[in-house]
Image 1 (cartoon, rainbow, N blue to C red):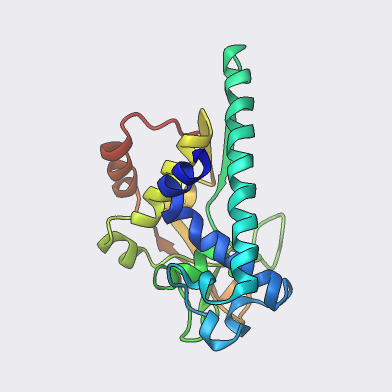
Image 2 (image 1 turned 135 degrees about the vertical axis):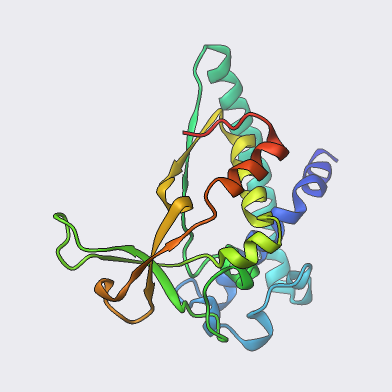
Length: 213
């Protein structure tokens, strides 16, 4: 009963991850989602119930997330009772082969097959004379802005639920980010503007004081 109530409250953010991991275990963990069978390449709520093996795997992941949630909240309460605050790290980007990109294709710079069109990185500096290519698909901030930054709001909300403070890694990416055409070198990239304060104003309106570092 407790699990069902928790699952109902967390279904929106949980299901894409659960379906993604369940399919990975059937198709093969080393096969990126753009190469999955065509009927599995696009996320839809409840799709894991269409295939018995995927459905069984999905339930295992739901239960595992529930157990983690309980254990994490107990650990955090134990720490907080002793005056210890927990800092969680939130990376700016996500992997191209992730449930986030698979389920939210329109907010990332992807081609029609789901492969990155532009990826994150940084220009040349004293550390790397040829620059760096990280390979993560960059965001389509124009689409996110029209949607009220909904994906980011869900992500920030989850982080605020889990931690006392959230470290944004790195906050520079919200101001400007280095955009590299996929398949080219870092020297071919260019700086682009991010959402700036607009996103944080939206977050503050929704969450109040922001516990960000």
